[in-house]
Amino acid sequence: MTEVRDDLDVLRSAIGGPVFGPDDTGYDEARSIWNGDIDRRPLCVARCLSAADVGSALGFARDRELEVSVRGGGHAYSGTSVSEGGLMIDLSEMNGTSVEPETGMARIGGGATMADLDAATQAHGLAVTGGVISHTGVGGLTLGGGMGWLTQLAGLSIDNLASAEVVLADSSVVRASDDEHPDLFWALRGGGGNFGVVTEFEYRLHPVGPEVNLGLFFWSLDDGAAALRLCQEFIPTLPARAGCLIAAGMCAPPEPFVPEQFRGMPGHALIVAGYSSAAEHASTVAPIRDALAPLFEFVTPIPYTGLQQMFDDAAPWGILGYEKALDLDALTDEAIAVIVEQAPRKSSPLSFMPIFRLDGAFTAVGEDDTAFGGARTPHYVCNIAGMSDTPEVFAADRAWTRSIWEALRPLSSNQGSYVNFMAEPDEDRVRAAYGPGKYDRLAAVKAQYDPDNTFHLNANIRPA
Image (cartoon, rainbow, N blue to C red):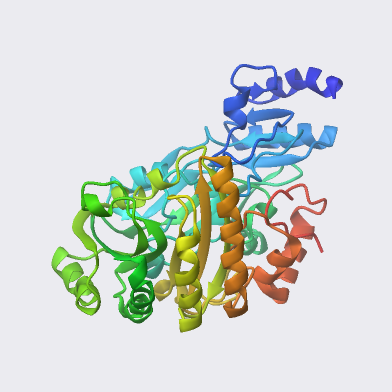
């Protein structure tokens, strides 16, 4: 190990960016990631500035048989972007953006966050689907699928991916698209970080913003069953230019729009985003309050970037986090009963269950057109997130997360669910997420592009 530490100057001379070893100033900052529950010490962090830097870092790791991790935004609950004693390839400085409003296309560096992407595209009133927290990295989010406020309107992030620049395990650099390395391009769209380091994404954009409309409706825990049944009935009626999120078990935020007596109160929320006029949005959300009066509501125009940042404070950098997820074809009475029973049992005000509806443009893409690990029929992805800044409370809500997942599992249509929502990716869940046919196809692509499984710190696909 001492010999390898002394060898870091070789890596420093090979790449344009800085290299941090355990004794260097900035090492602890460089190895830190969003989930404060992860505390690993890599041998070194290579902060790359180009695809050539990434290739050189991979060569260094390959020659010394070091485990490789790849950090884009560093936002995953799993913490797979940092390994103990390995080499972390840090893309955070590769966050450049280039938007062509005339063609509706954007090229984004592999280390950019959604905030970087949104700032660049919203300058032209354009957007692409991308999560619900702005400090999420575009890389990890996109490679797993990429769902968010625009899923109904525009599909997943991968449904809007036109090409990707990829550094392969042998340090070669390729461009993957429908016309170049189409098998790799298929696998990148949902197969996660299994196939290489993506240093640039090219997206097709959609006219959205810069101002959109928000409707937030909040009910008490006592009204939980009625509120979730309302969600099940209302959400399929949403127009194409709208999106939604169910926030089950959420505590009302300490914001000015929340009446003081309700701030911090646990309950259930339905959040609807509209991308047409304020009048159309008002008409869209009117049936919600007519069906079940909320404790409070907030209907207002909002910048699209504000919509994207709405949950940032609820998931701050350094929080202790754990999550599990599964797919539900519908919010059946049985599923609602589990959610209503379990929601009050959380301990942390930050823990809740974000439930995503996949419908609209999402269903227009063929089941096998991408590697996305889930059905292309309308359904819900039910995420259960336990978060706290206190270890004891976090331990309790990690158990809470697992108990809800176990209770919902018999009702699930896909227990593997969304690979980006795996805090503990294991082979059985990864296989369940993709299904045997798609998993085998991914394994064949893996064998071609990464036969030695260099990129295994992820929801791993083993080479065929």
